Length: 435
Image 1 (spheres, rainbow, N blue to C red):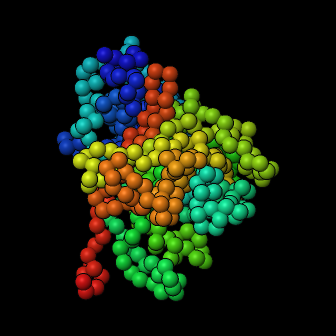
Image 2 (cartoon, helix red, strand yellow):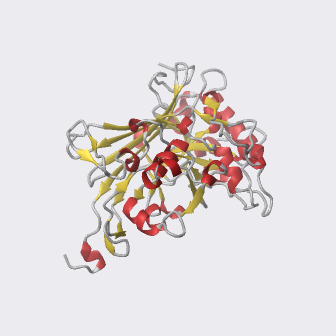
Image 3 (tube, rainbow, N blue to C red):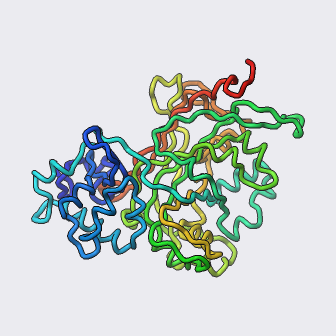
């Protein structure tokens, strides 16, 4: 049956990609192998490049450029336009998918709607810059307590500004992905001056979301004010920041976040949900108990009510997904707009396609913690799974599945999933090490 007068049939209560969502991605098919831009709708993908070729983007901002924006192997060209263009595209797509005089006719539907099961998803954005933030107060407090003790859990700068660091954008890939356990240098638990090179013993996930920045880049030396930051925010995806904890511990002093522990792979979901789709789920963000610097004060201080989950399929679960974490994006303290504003506050140009990862999103209880480091308390308190298996960190053969959904009145906005499998490290012979 048609749903909400949409020409694509779906069940509103369970469909991740209803007409209220319309997330963007990049896809190809066996019969048309060139990647191009599409929108997920029900169990179909609407081929925007095919729509553009037929002249069906007829608005004043898109009529002359739609093919140049959508017949592309990434979303960068579209993201680099202005919010007015994004709004026109969303309105036109909604019109074409809504039953009535303006809808796609059946012949055109057959040409531009592709079964989701028949597509291959590609990395949707060519990311020029990727910054990982540390913006959940609960997560930062939990980790600080484990490392420094409760009396010094939060460093003084944490409540003054969004803390983040640059990571190699080349480490980003679209999920599903194979996570090869990396080799790292680790320290001895009894002698901090002794190092050994071995497969990472404490491989971890981090439950995050990623905000993509769009719009024309600000000029060098011209910061973004926070109202301008809101206008630059394009869309949101799931983000798994895979982490090598032992390698991270061995290499983060004295420069901070580790290029070893944090730059081997991070995975994102294939679909980017526009912030326009999330407006009904906006809620007031946490207010810090101290005055903020002027550039971080925001009259529109919001986050979004998105339920987040992590499940694991282990070698012993017979394919069953076992629950690990249930969290929510509202546990984000520093908002996407504050992250972007602070990043650009010195006048650095922020290019379209830049990715702002939230940092691990954790709630106050163990079952709401967003990584195994928190859940297992640095590996000292293993998590017992329903199968009887124990996990301090993620084991070879484990499949980690992340999902997100914003629940509306009779519909939901889904983000798809990340679904990644951990594979054993390369053999010692790769490094010339005798076994």
